[in-house]
Length: 164
Length: 164
DNA sequence: TATATAGCCGAGTAATTCACTCGGGTATTT
DNA sequence: AAATACCCGAGTGAATTACTCGGCTATATA
Image (cartoon, rainbow over the protein chains, first blue to last red):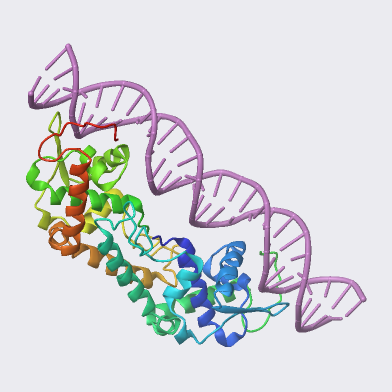
């Protein structure tokens, strides 16, 4: 079992998608700027998210990604599963062959823990997160910062200076 | 956050200690054989467990390790914390500086998850595990196998054949 | 039709961690 | 004196992470 930046990035990016769903397809470049995640790394993560049918893509200018389902129908556990192998805490993957073909001493502890974690992450959908006041506040801050920096909002803005 | 063989080995070894507490100090060689864990690796893990004051050691022949406290007073979370950094799921370690000095979009999700996991593992003591029927069954099997193979039990047994 | 956009894809890479091994100590009992 | 068993540090191969780089393809717009 592991939960690293990989899974965290994936959930953050998916939440960003959910928050800006009404703008149409969202480009990875936008997410990259708002969430401060490397664009190429996002591409890799979204390749997996697309294979898991959690998002669908629109190519060409004005394109980007869109949630494949309603935000209420996508839970955090699915997202982590899609990019990370799993949130299973056992070494045997639930097969009870952890200690020389037999069940190890602590087998039941790890299966219980896995259930606990999976149950928790399964019970939280993207919609649940979008509704949270804390999340909306952070999202507003990020949007303001993004617009101040001159990157894509509803419409394009001519860049005047030489700022990157 | 990560939960690998390292933390699992540590909990398994501590449980082995709790199960055989009445035999006096238990050597790592015994645990190594019973639980099928590399002796040198166990030494490394017990170095940490000793620093965390979860076990105390007895040197010399007949020596080994003993729980530093009653098995009811040692919970699984402590053991994992001792060998693994922590079971914290956030990237900022709870400092809320995950996204350019500010709180990231998914911050509260990871703190909630951390609390969930920690709460679960904090609520389980070694004594709780010792009492479980499944654990006792596995322990009996391991003890039988150990005695059949001729390694340390209550007394030494001469090895006759060339079996390793 | 040219061009820019933005998704796709594979290879490569430095750093880190895991799960060990190896080779030595040192304290204690018999 | 010898055996036991804890103690300690260094090293190692494999895997993973969090990226970068370079190039490709589909599509909208000028």
